[in-house]
Length: 379
Ligand SMILES: [Mn+2]
Image 1 (tube, rainbow, N blue to C red):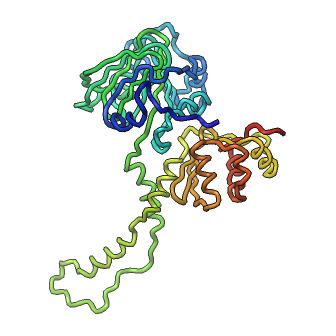
Image 2 (tube, rainbow, N blue to C red):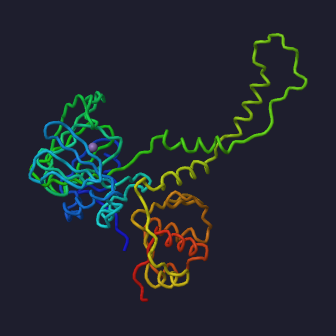
């Protein structure tokens, strides 16, 4: 039931990929996914772009660069050259796309960002640029020419609606065919241009949290949490012979109080879990229309199976876990099953029969919130 992550990209074992290329250098892998069938058709993609809950952009380069944000209800003709449609987070809206992304779970979920699909007509692209993300550029349909090079100068062309590099000196280029993958670590300058019409590229993106983004919410809570009564006192202070000199006792006492703020390892763990499971801004969950009662839920689930919604982010570490931004301590009795659910993103009914009561309660709450679903089982 769970989707097995890839063991190889083409002939390259993923362990070797991680050792040699991940975060280090670009690599082109021909026929990386030999059995690859594109899960998202052009029509499906265009339909997604029309929706208000889907993040999409239309880039045209007819006379000059133009950018429009979604929802995109009218597209140029697929026979017109030099336009491209980009749809973000396709894995959040499409099971086939989510399944494709799951094959890249040889990399930790904490690093996974999303699957973006771009559709382009002949000559279409978004110009030379750099990304802060690791990306697998998987050619899904048609052909695209990628040119890459070192980024010596990150300055951008002024006055454009897109981030396009002022200077781009490509050193390597390839034309990708369906099933080929080009992996790029962050910071490599690149440009992809469709060769012929009906070009579709899937960008499987991996985020690296910026320290600033990650730590800011924690620093804010620290400021709120840190309430302390009282003031500095100095009974018995010596006569100030150098009145402008800061009293050493004031420095010592202040430092002693600041030291009490030292975070513990557990604080880092909790911060990471809640930040990295926070749903993306566009994500909403739908509760079941006619929810099962707590008892019926347990019956259905233990006869069939449960699976996490494709939008749900569930991460765990040590004695803690977080689901969609909600942090909780896990108790020893539920831990094994909860971790199994998080790793496989599904659990069969047989293993659920041993689930302790607190875990059943948790699962039922998640079911009511639309975070997980019950499958199969007889009624
Ligand atoms: Mn890019």
